[in-house]
Image (tube, rainbow, N blue to C red):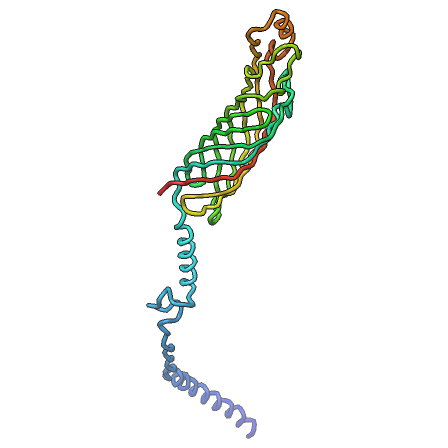
Length: 276
């Protein structure tokens, strides 16, 4: 009897479970999901909120805009430069036979003294082009130089940093007594007839401060390589045949000379700048 009731009880339990399962699932499906709570109201002044003031304190946009405005105000004082003129006042040292000399016939080929220069040109953003006249009033001789210039001026706030180069024509205007080596002390000298001329090429460096959008002051330096030539000197007028014979043996009067030299200089700068 017990053996017959056990299988029957298991069958009844299984059937009851199967009948109860769909009803339970249906009951669960019929239960509606809980309603979602609405988000809290957004602060209209919070960063990134719709309608928020981009210039409100504390926003990232306001910080960026403030930096841009500050940079614009700083830059607005500088003109878009197109033309410039400037002047130098400083000193220079020239050694006309620093590297080589072939019958240059100068006792004093090196000298130092004051230097003056005037320049003018155009500026295209950072590129500068110009011309310059320079006068070296040295103790043993004076030298004029006419150069073309090419450089780059990099603006750094109120300052301009200049790197450039130049090249042109150089010539000695006059030499002092005792500068020329004469072949004989008995022959009259003709220092006024000594002509030395040639070419120069060098590098420039300068730092300019814009005191106003139109006026700048600064300092600068340069270094030049000189290649110079001296044609034969004409004999002085009124000399005797004996003196002429002596001069005929002097290389200064018989053949030209060449030399390769060096020039160094530094100066204060004053500039005027014009543009839009």
